[in-house]
Length: 226
Ligand code: SF4
Image 1 (cartoon, rainbow, N blue to C red):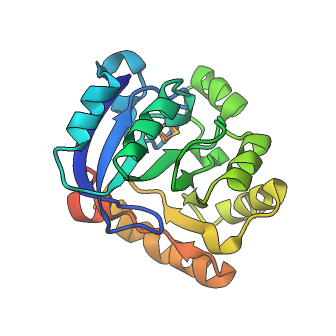
Image 2: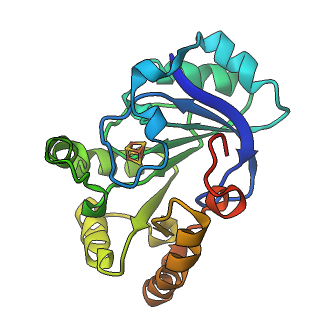
Image 3: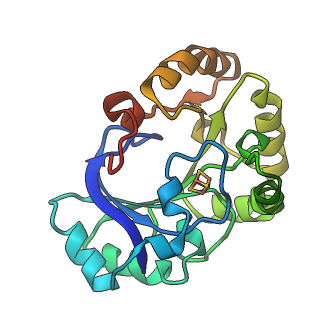
């Protein structure tokens, strides 16, 4: 598999925020989101080749039950099912972080952490924007993901104008448990996170949706491997 990085940190986002976790970041993502904070993981070729056994050995360096498979976009990787299966044999709790653009059946995954991409993520470059718009939102994939896995839905909020698009997306998916939906400030730096958080907090109070923390930004200002 092409691996961008493997490191030990705290889960920064979602309902498991604060839980010490080993992160396996797979290289490769087609979306090119405008505000992506892991651009170094876009290109598969930029990752190093690891066998699945080498990934397991690296993960086992830390005595940690929680493993987060992230990206890039893990769900487009054909070797993901085998990696999940092997990690599960070591009784790991596995979170997969995905944009929800591809579906794989029967993964032994404990939490599917889905972050559907809104129009606020569209790249400025027109060529990239066309690719992005073509694949950023697949309602059937999102529906299959929430029907088949324990999930959380994290929406990145850039401004309060995003709320209607979020509500429309939730309605389009259908059957979404609102207690599993979170709103997360769009922020690449600690300053941006602190500046946008009050606006997102107000949206959370208005809608009853949970506020999504970004501890990696707050604690480490989004340094690599955090
Ligand atoms: S889906 Fe995630 S990894 Fe891919 S470009 Fe968007 S933010 Fe970055």
